[in-house]
Image 1: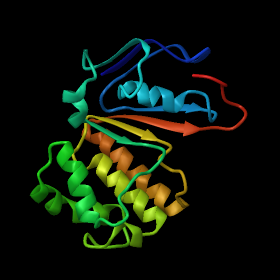
Image 2 (image 1 turned 45 degrees about the vertical axis):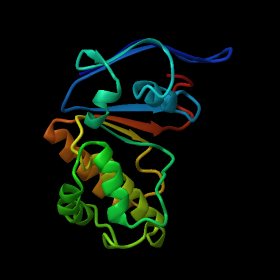
Image 3 (image 1 turned 45 degrees about the horizontal axis):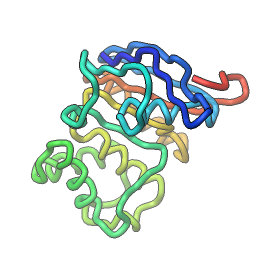
Image 4 (image 1 turned 30 degrees about the horizontal axis):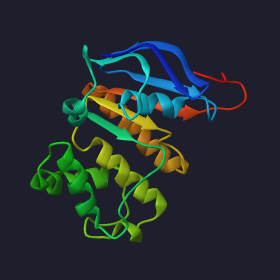
Length: 195
């Protein structure tokens, strides 16, 4: 379970998060929707302890710290891949930081690439892939270590309807596996100004 209690985050005089509280359990998808600038990414960065904040954030009863990062998968809004590396090198490098062995990644990666219909091979350079396929590789990096908490910041950004449907299937499968998924998404003028 993820518990966010009375979360407040200020940048100088500007208060971005105003005593935000919620709970979310394993096997659920929680959508966090707001306008650009409403605090979605600030919340995401606070959960991962990239920022200091007031309040409390607990995962399974304990504060999130370095030792828990191997149980978390996160897809940031701004994608960051090494263009000159091969797909395999990129995925292996980041998956090993989450505790997977290079041999396990080499074994599992083809199945993930097929599942997400990646047009390319493990030996292709990242820069040779289309932006959509690069985004799928970033998603594979987020999920390949089977995290318990998955944070997706605007995951459908730039994807066409076919690839959006593929991604939805994968997200639902992760929910069925028992992962807790936080899903961050922008909205139109009808949604709240702040979280």
